[in-house]
Every structure is written in C-alpha cells, then in structure tokens.
Image (cartoon, rainbow, N blue to C red; front, side, top):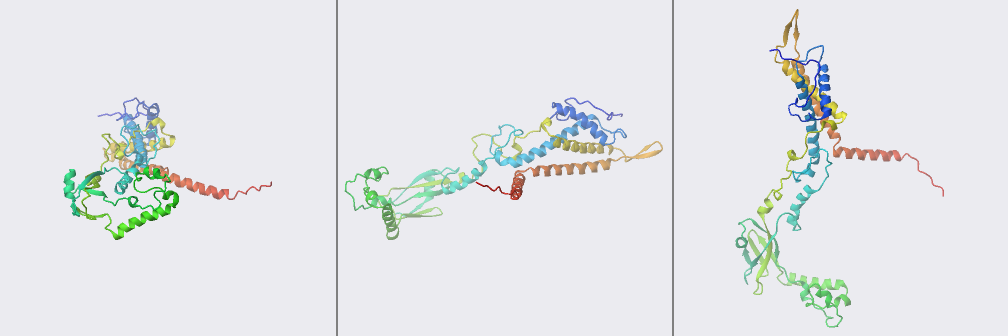
Length: 384
C-alpha cells in the first residue's frame, strides 16, 4: 500500500484538525502551514523523508495550543478558586475577565462561629416554652423535644431565659416625690413605674450603678440566684419554681441543621469544584510571542512522538542498495518524551513566577532596594 507522505508544503483548510478548536482563527490558519514546514525541516526534510502527512502536523499544533491553554487556565483557576467557589455556574467566561477577590468563602467559614456565639450564622435558632410546675426543679428535655416535634437527640439548647427581674424594679429612691418632672426619662425605657428619675439629677451615675450592683450581689449571695444546670437531657433550675412562675422560654437549634455540610443555594447551580470554573480554550490570535514559541516547541515534540511511532512499525534496519539504513524510532520517542516533560516543567515554573505570592514578594524586595538606593541621595539643604 503506497500511502503519500509529506510532500514539502501544505495548505490548511478549516476542518482538518481533530477538534476544530481554532480552525476559524485566521492567525491559526496562517501558522498551521508555517509550523508544518518548521517541524518537517527540524526533523531533517528535505534530506530525509518525513513519513507524515499535513494532518499529523495540524493535529500536533492544535494539541500543543490546547495543552498550553490547559496549563495556563488550570493555574489561573487554582489561584482564584476562592473567588469562584459558590458563584453561579452561569457567570461569563473567565478567559478575558479579571477575577475580583472576595471574602465569601471566609464568611461561610466564620458563619459557623457566629452560630455557636449566638450572633448570626446560617443555622436557624428556634424558641419554645417549658411549662413550670411549682416545687419541681428538674425537667427532662425529651418531653420538650417531643412537644416541639424534634427528633430525640436532635435538639440542643442554646439559651435559657430564666433570669431574675431587673434590679431597677427593686430600686429605692430616697429623693422620690420632689416634683422634678424627670419621669419621662425612665418612661422611655418602660421603667417609669418603678423608680423616679430624680437620681439622674441629684446623684452621679456611678451611684445608680452601685445601687443596682448591690441588689444583684444580694440576690446572688444571700438568696437563691436565678440560674440553671444543663446536663445531658436534664435541665435543673434555681430557685425552685413558685406558684407565680408558669413558663420558662428557651432557644434551641437542631443538630441536624448544624451538621448539614451543604450550603442552601436555593436551587441555583453553583461552582463547587475546580472543573466548573468557567475557563475555556484560549484564543490563539491573543497568545503572545512567548506563548507561541512554547507552543511551536511542544508541537514539535508531539510530531517527533508521532514520527517515532510510525517508524517503529518497521524493522530498525532496512536494506538499501549496497548497504543498510538504520531507523531512529527509539531516539525520536526518547527525545519527544524528554522535550515534553522539560517544556511542561518550564511553563509551570514560569507561571509560578507570576503567582500572587511571588509578585508581592518581588514588589516588596523592589521597594526595599529602592529605599536603600534613595538613602544615598544627598538631602537638600534649605536656606531661608
């Protein structure tokens, strides 16, 4: 079977690459044939025949561009993933957009601390009341859990509203009844019926604070202070409820809500992993000369690999008139493998030098050395 091989020139047309990612790019169309000529000459043409066709050169060229884009955008996606995570999958392509750093991921992490501290977060706090029985000090929360319709063991008490009345309701004012007309101040806080506001005029503020503190200390030390003890499912309250105490309110969460590892996205598909970051194949005409040179070299390595596989189909030694010729399939395959590995490592090292961390380090070093250089500049002496 006489299969035609590289004739020495080619003419690219859209549709001649395996995937057609870049076929409609005018710059790609022009460079495809130039690369074919470049690769063939690097492999020894026209001194030796190159047992390939133009389609092989085009396929290698397309693969090299795609590999370059994959390395480039995989690096960019890793650098900016915290900004993309949680964003809708419908956002525009990231290729030509500048990612904006945000604190969304950090805030999602901080939400968990807000839940435990009772100052926010993403776990709902529920409220309910426990009926108090005069003379009964211990209350089993399993009954309360059943009352609230929560599964046994899923309820966790976060706050118990079992507190002494405010000290202000037992505040004694020795200056009451002087007719100063200051009651409006306490009325605005709902305490107008407990203590006249004369002390705000006649006594310093620290006097009021000391009186309130004395009342609270008295309750804590000389009386059974309002308190509670929560062990396992048993709630023990102090003091023992009296006849005029009918309910005790509590706030609680469901452990299943806190243990749910997934964020409620309200049915919107969001970016959850690196494969969903909206990067696509690069536009070849927008790749600069540095990137194109890497693409040419990597495509050449791919062509070596293809040619090595083709020549490897034959015996290493082929008889020719008066002598034998040696095929170099092993050399081509070995060289292609080394070249591809070296090129990938070089590209990744180049990208690493442009990482956010490296750029900030370089800028800091530059500022430090510039400051040292400026220290050698003589200071101007001003004579008035």
